[in-house]
Length: 220
Image (cartoon, rainbow, N blue to C red; front, side, top):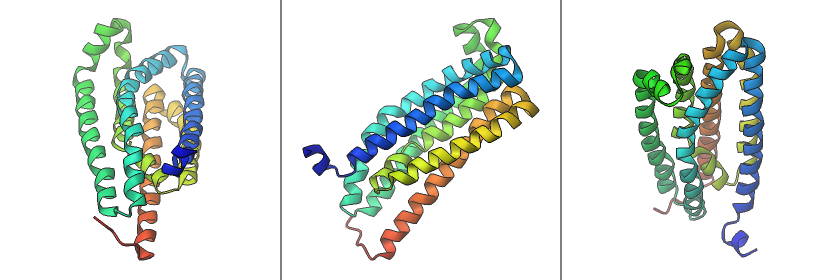
């Protein structure tokens, strides 16, 4: 009760995070099955290897995601919108530059890394990894978006954004896989994160604009 009073949006943050994680976990299992059914077992194997490698980059943002929410919530509650925007923007840019550096490394040295860690048989997953890693670059760059929307007291928008973008992902995934093979399957994940981040940015900007229009002072 004490924690809930100190951070009013904490439990909504916890529940929304759990729901989003449940959707993400189920989708991560289902997409591999779809790729296997549409492109074959060998393609599913390459896809799974790419997912495992790209997931390392995703885990980099997890502790940042957990730590930034209390700061954002405090700034929003204190109506310090300028600092709120700065905290929303700067860490995302830094994480994005780091993840982009990793992506370029995979683009030019991915085959060597795969041969060294997985063996020569998995070198073929490098193009898939490049596409999947590009999706993770977008994801890592946008890691402050969900905590920001939750800090604004809009967990339902975060949840429906995740639900809607996941639905679109599974609509695009079979089409891309059929037409472009396993690389198309990985490219559909780029589409997912482009849609997700665009929707999140839209809702955040709209909420900020509404707060400003309401005449709330920005105490720096």
